[in-house]
Image (cartoon, rainbow, N blue to C red; front, top):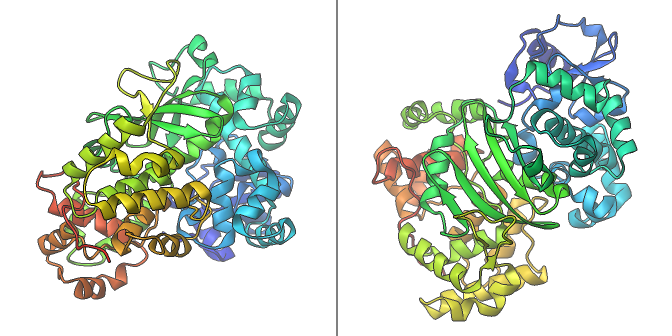
Length: 511
């Protein structure tokens, strides 16, 4: 559901304690000096005492502290940053990824193509705070999550959350939450669930192994998402069963392995990190992988308004887009998946990993996750020799990997979908299907409909929609900007196994 933007609509949401808007805006109360989520159970403040902010950072900057009762920092992120393609939203995605902590405001600005002054003005105008304040709020949110969910020593929490010093960490926590870090931990432990019954003990935590709960908006089709990822899992890189999914990932300071166990209200994430300071990047990556910041009620309501789609939504509420942890990996998988079955694509990708994958260090590896997908440089050098199949496909993979390795094509969270897909389609052997599939998986694009995909068309027939590309586009035009979620329902409807989402079987050859 779109977040209300005028005062009266926002106040109505607060008066009704509407949890659908938690994380989408914050209510600051002048009489108490605190800010809350819309669903805060406390007595509704008088309208004249309320100021609404789009970000927690803006409320911090205005001098408000977080409510101890409704815990606004414990909400999922705003879906607006995933949906919007403007500079402010792309900046928020990169800030969540930890770019400001690693590269500073100058690095963030360069990635977005603005000067630091221009970007600061845009963010102040749109979000009420500049990049440093937004990054600080992100660090505070991560710090609270660690204090509540882990046994990490306070100094390690400060490091993992991205603070430059323990003093800066202590000052920020006191300012944002009105408590010391130890008080935040004690208060939360008395009222909130632990991360997991089998959470790692202190020795494991010191070694960089920790367990957290990631909040998610309900409904959440976590089982379907795990099934999707599991059917495409590459041995050694990924592992999955009916309840959990594990994989290796490449982070700024070294490799990591994450294990994810979705539930109805949250996802338990166990992370084995080389460096604790990579935690914010790992969290942001996992949230994109599982599409945790989506607004399922809004998406389901929009899709269910179409009479041919309503039954599928009712059968599978809260469907999500399966993301990725590595855009270069997704490009390779999409190219190798052209015109073949899911099983055949998985075999081809497995051969590539066997030849070029990077072994994980023993401290990070698990029994079944032992390596990383090859990086772009390794793919550019060795892909053509490592795989079989048509020469044009091998050449396309090598060319795409070279473009990614050299920075000619960039697919980070700060890229606009239209620009990224145009860059991809400028490469040899990459057409609309491949670029669209990469946009769906690597960039979380919400409005992709691959009408040339045979399984999409089969799913459309199953739901009573037209299966010819032009007619399918016309029949579903009113479902924009949520047609990626429609496509997940179409793939599920076309699946040969009841209840198991299937991807493309075959699709037309690209130019």
